[in-house]
Amino acid sequence: MTYPTPEQYQGWKGDAKEMDMSVSEWMQAMIEAGRKKFDAQVEPDESAEQLRRQRNDLKTELERARERIQELETQLHHGEQAVIREFVEENPGATFEDITRHVIDTVPERVNRHLDELEGDALYVDDDGYYPESDG
Image (tube, rainbow, N blue to C red; front, top):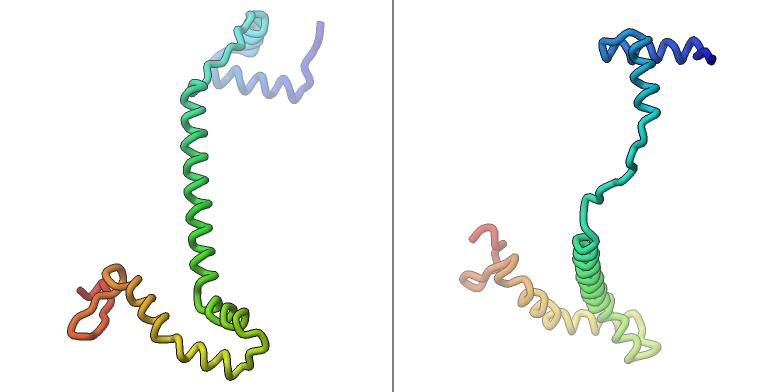
């Protein structure tokens, strides 16, 4: 014979009360439940095919995200800093004044490229003026 600790007994007493049983009834029910052989089979929530499909979808999504990151990094490198870097690579030893002159001389070309990209998306043209797309 074994005796529970006072803490165990209080826990069992609380559990029995929740189930509207006496402690003796609760102990008998728990002992019988423990003696039964449980079949520990677990049914998966999803089939292997469904998991493969989800994995493939996630791989595709990851690849698209990586491609988009690469595109954004490329745009960044071809931005304003790229103008200076390319000029210096083509003109080693260029002075600050040389670089400033090149940036000033190439502004219209770069501004046109930026405006072309923004037009119809974020900006619209009306009477030779540019306006935010939200106004039109």
